[in-house]
Amino acid sequence: MSERNGFVSQYFEKILNIVDVGVHFIDREGNTVFYNEKMAEMDGFDREQVLGQNIFRLYPSLTHETSTLAKALRSGEELPEHIQTYYNVAGKRITTINRTYPLFENGIRGHLGPWP
Image (spheres, rainbow, N blue to C red):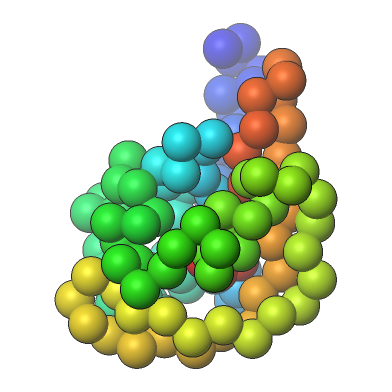
């Protein structure tokens, strides 16, 4: 990564941790690659315990059919606002209004979802 890209990346991460919206990025295998402070607060997790973890391990109540992140991963399309209730691995019930966006880099699909 170039020095400029690293500099920009640090600022994007800082901004995404400041906003009052939960943000959760996954890769095409469903593993967490970014998880902001607001999302951690909502889910009751530490950010570090979530990074690298698969969404179905983190949220065992979700399936490929009920997870908006998994749906966007399959379809490659943005999912509009949707009310979703799910449970995390600790048994915490979480209800959110989420919007999920597919992201592509060099033909590899990943997803930005304010909530799973």
